[in-house]
Image (tube, rainbow, N blue to C red; front, side):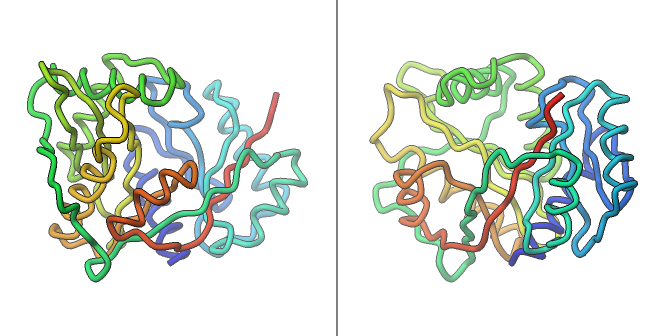
Length: 249
């Protein structure tokens, strides 16, 4: 599965408005933001980069005023981490990812009404709710709402549970499939609505949607044992690890 996840990462970054391919790496850039969590690079599976390759990648980030940062499955490119470490990169995090396939998908028994956004107000509400759910880690913005709309309109999916009286109680999204797999991300529930099964409902609905569209699997990363249990209840199982590395100025 590691090769599939890494091949997906490459294909997904190649969808960005600006793509730089250099030294066996793919750098995906969205000119609407300088966020290192949007603008980052990933290696091609099996690449064996040298010092010049890493230096060229660092320069490509610098030319765009971006922090050098990579996300990748280390098992699919085992020579990358030592090369980055030699250049001064440090590990931000190591995350386990979980995988759902048709045989393991389990829809929640008590089905909440999960919706597909259709208006600008829906997308803005989802962006604001996710910002709140993640403790203001990123600010809600028109650009964030526009990225959500692009996800839905480019073959991916965005799903949410509407809050009583309107707005968004919780949501998540899936990237459009590539190499027969799709990444599910941004699962968030506003604090006042937690414990009601919203995360499980949107996760299961998104997995069902992408599998029905022909994806062979859906994968995601989790942020703690509590969220892991939510995902396991709807059919996600351990698949491997992803590594985040960055270079401080």
